Image 1 (cartoon, rainbow, N blue to C red):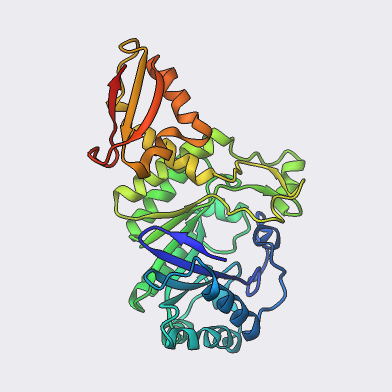
Image 2 (cartoon, rainbow, N blue to C red):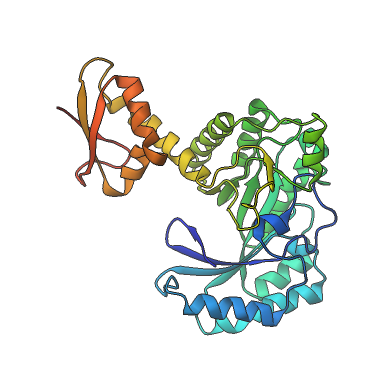
Length: 345
């Protein structure tokens, strides 16, 4: 029901799988990813979602509350449908139950008329499914737009006063680590307000699954995907562009046996990337190999999970690097964020 973001955001997603899309991209299976049907959504369905969200224990009036339309190409819906969906949210905005609306769309699917409509009906954020800034990768992925479309879309959105997000997908056909790092650098030049990283995953029923079965496509290896996303996060966030999501969200449909055919999917993929970033930060504070047989680590409470890593994998890596057995990780709020104190035992 809710999607969380840093800095006190609380998002209620409303999925419109494939609605408004001019075609289906080779990686796309939105019904499976979202566990939502592709049937057109209406005012009544939106009210049901929002009423349920407001009654939830997670609904918090002190947070930045936002309604988000995800999954299709919102700005390629008919004007009348866009108006209907946005006006369904209007009473909740008027009552202060939600602060704003965000939508996701394609870079080649916006124009002044639609942007004016969205501004007038409460939309403040637009996320662009750019996926790559390499035209050959976009062509092989059958996206139907170019990197230039993304650049022009960002400029147009800025002129209309929208907050801008960019969604990227490493590991598409024709992509490489080098090409994707160039994509990240091109995105940094556009100064978006946020970014998302979704490593390409092969899902049953997609064109990508067919290419994979014919050995014409090879997805990223898991560790390779973590590395690419780690480096991308570091680059983006060092330039003030927060990465608000890493990896596909799980759904009951996606988790069914046989739905994920291949590729770097993990239910905790984002946490694995964040742990890898944190581990890189704290390496300088670890004892050199052979210096101590046992150590205890002190860290800020909220960063202890990052130190430990997924299923304590981070502690195993620390032992491999230092030769020191980690006897515990304890909370110490005197430790600056991004650092650790190490006690030799």
